[in-house]
Length: 587
Image 1 (cartoon, rainbow, N blue to C red):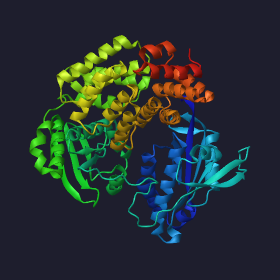
Image 2 (cartoon, rainbow, N blue to C red; image 1 turned 60 degrees about the vertical axis):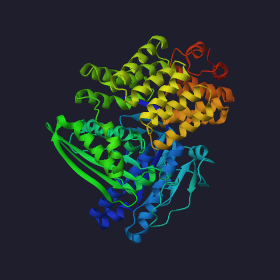
Image 3 (cartoon, rainbow, N blue to C red; image 1 turned 180 degrees about the horizontal axis):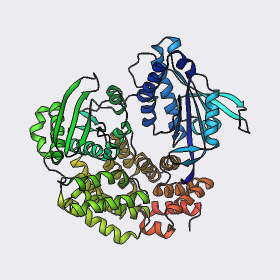
Image 4 (cartoon, rainbow, N blue to C red; image 1 turned 90 degrees about the horizontal axis):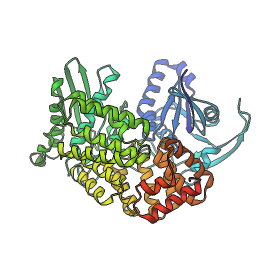
């Protein structure tokens, strides 16, 4: 029997109004329009706001979000885009949706969710009129005053199979007009940087084998890394662009959402020992193709193909800088695809600060080193995973940090040009409460890759833990701009919470740590910090609940551990942090 887990989530339920009528009139056209709406409008919006589709039967959608704010923002964007699309059609051909949102407890099993939380969302959806968004009282209480939307009270409603009346509110917003080229989300399009900017969308796996996804993902990752070495080029981080994986977004919309002038997209087909890669560079302001190429090679030439793609993009963007900068791309990380594949598989588990993911990453990285002992990226990332274990408080910090530092230094010796190796050394020093060497090493990583969003985040952590909260917040802002739609946003939010704590902004510290754990429920360091700042703020209920989660993830957490091992450098800040945990109930 599948494992069942309970969790508190925001649930968005949507369906098409008059779908049966449309199907009766023209079944083929209606199905085609529904697929187009989902693929072009609804699913990309859901991905941008961190949602996960857990049900899509017929004309309905059921989507899970980590926060009520994200769910409401997504719903408004969906309805806004649908409104613009429908305005171009005759009334009888329009496909309008109604949306209901609830915040409630659900049972998660396999890939879907069940329970009263879902049932209430579905009932609220039925109360919504076409083209509108209705929310429950619990969602209203979470988003009130935090979003630029009015909330109209529709009162209580008794609905089928729900014993208690449901209090419903309708979300009101200024609708976009038809033909508008602006971003249809509630946020403004991001401005273009003052230098060439690019986003590399995940290359599509055309092999017909889902197991080969890691292969196309790895090619995308390596191209992003190579492009990021150019100081004159603004490169969006990998985690933001991977929000578009499996979608077919309009590149002009991508350009507005990520704030870039160019998009690189492509596909990979691997058949036997042959490899075919198609790549094209597109100007997001016009949709025009700047450059396109096809590569048909033996699989042993994979790194040469990556270099050629990257060099061609650079040539198309800034020909005059090609000769000076092109040499940086010649050094290949490894000639072993197996070792490289292990690292590619490990990367998503490296930076999540979750014990189970850390274990998975360690196994993959050890395998990569067995295959290729001189692979700098594998060596240094193994050091990162060990330092993360110390940061999480799940091992004795002293010996494992020494081992982590040795691996980071070895990674630098193996490839001094790899920014990850320098970042790992900085991260180890940060966890070991050595802010000077930590900042020096992280800045060395940023010298090699100024667009390295994670390095900006670790620099922000180093500054925050070191007592410079305001400067930490500025670095967080850079990290968020470089990676505006990111799977490591929980780490960014927690870092902002730490910086606010150090800067003396207690209410903001509570809010950012709360948002971090909402996004990543097994994020132990964030739960620990939420317990501390909630305890200081006087919210005993929140502090106690957060401490319980922190102890679940770090059973050995004590006040003595905080004094001896927590990365906060200044004794007065550390003492105040410990006092918050003491008020939360830690001994």
